[in-house]
Image (cartoon, rainbow, N blue to C red; front, side):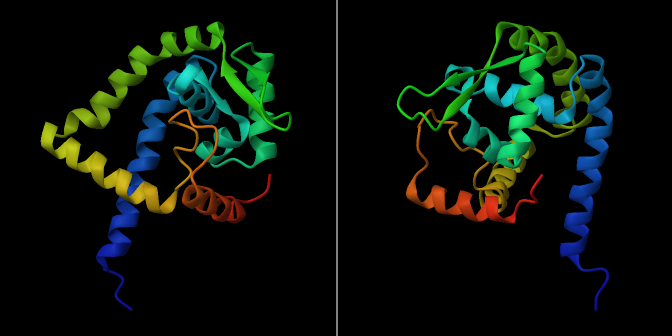
Amino acid sequence: MNFDDHRLTAVGLLTEVHGGLLARLQPVLSGAGLSEIDFETVIRLARSPGQRLRMSDLAAQTELSTSGVTRVVDRLEREGLVTRQACPSDRRASYAVLTEAGRARLESVLPQHVQDIEDWFTGLLGAEELEGFLATLRKIRDVVRPCATAGANGATEATGAQAVACAAEAAMRPRS
């Protein structure tokens, strides 16, 4: 076995970078009263059409189980950052919707968060490097997390291929 295999190096570097970035970014989020998953949830809502997502799409995007996303949304709802809306066309579905208070919380944390991202990540790369890096990340993401953009285009239903991929991805998630 070759312990110097470039594939091991690639995953190791990615893990180190991810952990290092999270450690650098977390203090600002914590200062705003947001955990990593809270921030991921509200920023995904903020960046979605109508600042809302079906609960099932939010679970797929965040890689939480349906019960896990329900608990996160319950907590954010108690804080007034998110609310739920019933789906008018499907009584089984509901939407998580960013509230004005949620938007205000994001707006209070984003300037420093974006500056931190610039200082410790994107600003370290030239424009062409960053463009290529983002394209590479999307290419890998689309294979390993095909549901990461579920519902992002405003569609209420996933395409057939995306639905199959999301079902397979959900089956691999640990139950919480």
